[in-house]
Image 1 (cartoon, rainbow, N blue to C red):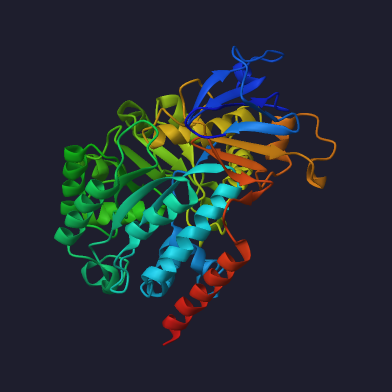
Image 2: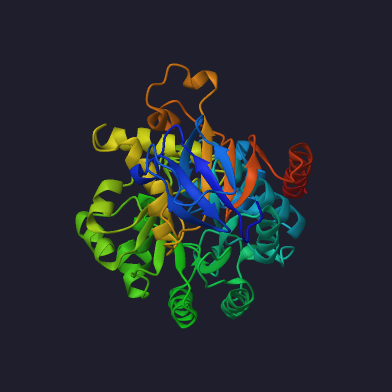
Length: 453
């Protein structure tokens, strides 16, 4: 199938979350052009047919928050069994040694891992800029293009180091004008605005405890001037709340509002410790929340109030978060975690597998400000994830769609991005997985050795 002209019918999937597409979808070029009802046929004879009768068909999953570089420090002994603030202070000194080569292979591995889990749009929050790391976002954009995945890349930043009461070491703190100048360069160079954009750029000061109020204000103004989105960590822990009260005299959301960030342009990572009034304010503003269940559990941060946020009008998406607090980049597995953690907070009848699939697709797309992905509607991008249920873990499952989450699907059999197959038979096109892992392991060892020097 050439993307410009030929049509492909993904025919009669075993299951699909969209009733109107129970008979599959027709793809032409980069888009879905038709939904086929159960037992139906396309209006026009397709050029090709893919028999999906042994596959569960989902819209491509959308990840809303990650730190690709953290794949280099998974299960790092000195940081184990710690809550967020001591965990961060332990790892900041390691991450301060990052160089361009290490970030490039870490980003490539994280994106491949996500892609293999059925994720077609990846988002990364990169805020560590050491002296040896000069082309961070540029290398990520290049890797995303080579892999053929969509990428929402954020120009993160830290401007308040330990000398000024922040958490990061001074070696990864940047001058604020340098941050703003590079942010503007990246927007001009990489941000795509058209429907079907493959790369977008957002501005992402790291957190209230690592950037100044001036930088938060300036980032909001720059984002408005260039019509790009804003992203940061917020309300992740009670320690953060105490920090904001002590330093700013206000709770984290009040601080965010004071910095002109409380709007539909913004999506926030974690969003755990909001009170009832704050949830209503988030909903009225249309501010999105990237729900990170595994990371929240590993660090003991708390339980996100997903249902209240969604009911108030705040988009809720799903995210794997960084691979040093997860410690994987698998969005299919993250759906199962979201289901189980949600049922712990609420009840099984309120947090269903359908709801979690919605968070991982439509909700995540809304967090990123996109309507062209996250669904199976005609006119949307042909981003698809197809899962087989032929492993032992699925044997005996009666409901295929529920089985994806309850039985623990972790690998897609086929993944399509913009009308092109990027994963076939569970393997990413054009990627030598053994070689990639070898390069990544070497980079991780070199980063740890730098710490010991």
